[in-house]
Length: 199
Image (tube, rainbow, N blue to C red; front, top):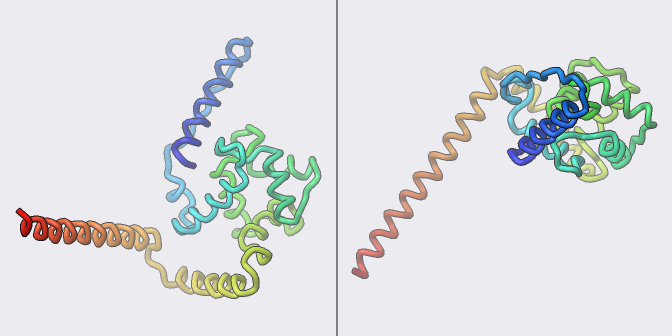
């Protein structure tokens, strides 16, 4: 969830609490563990989580960091698996641990965790959502499907051989940043040398 979406979500929650208190309704505190999404969903790589986030944001038309019933309905229609109103409510209820009748990005990732663990029935809406968002042959074509399955096989092999995929990705990111900084330093030095000629 982007910083803007997170702030918007917090402010919306605060407004809802204030409105409820003004109306005399008791509001129970909601606690959220301060764990990283990458730590909690360790079975996914950082790249996969970013891809899921891109997919999530594509359908989060309100930009509030949640998929509500209407956005989920639109998502399922675009994926070619429209659901009934009750079907959509059932899909939300299956992963909605905080009972706000919306799917947060964390809950969206739960769908893929449950799908990979075989915890979803094949005919459920969430199972269809997981299958259809994993790869959309209509968008990427057969060549994309071929590369997808090749990547999937590579991933399975990597998982068998992995020590710590997460640590490897962090090292690669740090190495990339180090190379960028060295390149910047080299450019600054070259500029200084060129500038000294004109002084």
